[in-house]
Length: 321
Image (cartoon, rainbow, N blue to C red; front, side, top):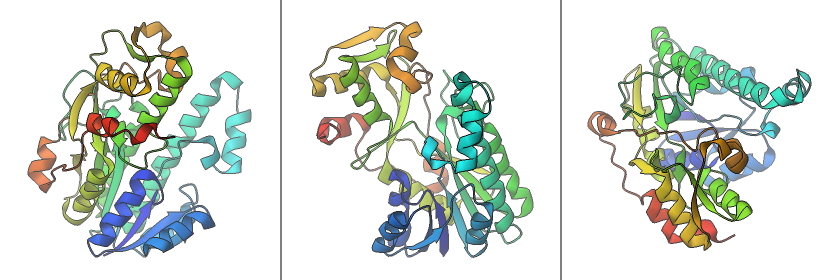
């Protein structure tokens, strides 16, 4: 199968590219730079120049493919094109710039999904889209049969999930793979674990909020890659899957593990101090997001086989920088 992959040179994307190639697929990755293109070509994949804001490029890449995996999302200001950055900077008060950035990012994602789906329509070709588990209702064990919750911490991504699943009406074998906040593994440089380590080093403590009983799901990036490959090959239209190995690791346990390796005190902080302590992570640090993957095991035969979050932290490579 010729597979078009967006986000192909990211932490998860590269693992997906390798998994697809190992399974015998021909992979074409969306790239924004010559450097990224060289990384893909070195792996034996092909490079397709463009970005998720370049709808013409997305359309041509998807139209030439037998299936698409969409993992790209601009998490950084620098990922957006110049016109988008200018709109974010000068479209209102400076205080509202983060909100404008997120609005631009999620709308770009929705338009990209719509464009990819239109290019695939009518031929029962697969489109597998990455979504966060944070779109699920907090404080409840989320399952694959649960729809996205407009009142969740990840509520801004709800329209993208709905757009993806609605593409089944256009003859697209569309599915979503929900990914937890904590995707870990060797090579993780910009995810939640490195961010928590940086914050702990800067603040001098490894902190959690309140009792720290709120749970975060987690999974190894190589297990995520295998699930995307299975979904591409087998998932029926309008289906949801969960790339979750640890259903919910208490945030306190994560803080303790990090504190031990950093030789820093582990302390509880008040919820009112979350934003000042955790920065952009402050809105998520107290979220309770337990997630089951039992139906994914049953429906696709997926089983996570790689190390757990705490095992990965205890291997120590996160601290070697």
